Length: 100
Image (cartoon, rainbow, N blue to C red; front, side, top):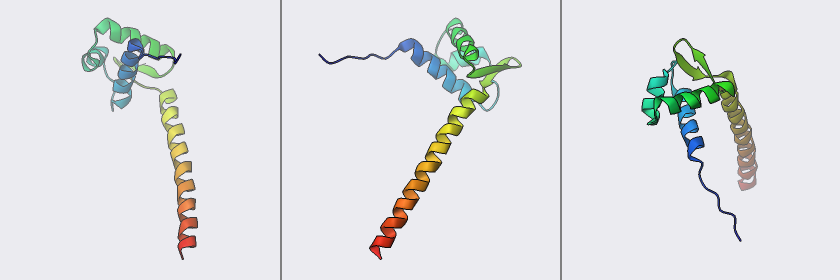
């Protein structure tokens, strides 16, 4: 019998909140996070505390920003894409030489 998987709604809310915080160019207040995520203030705060405890966000003044841990994920992704770009460019060069 095939395994069935389901979406975890609580995780989806947390990721939506992380996305809101990570996408904000300036620290964003919890009330604004809750409003943008469409969740209650207490739900937003529970997620914020969890994300902060895990090191993905940090408090700055009266708002929250993405942490260096969050930035390192993006840096790793960019490094991967740059390596892939080089591999693709090398493959194109080989194909171009073969077409001559």
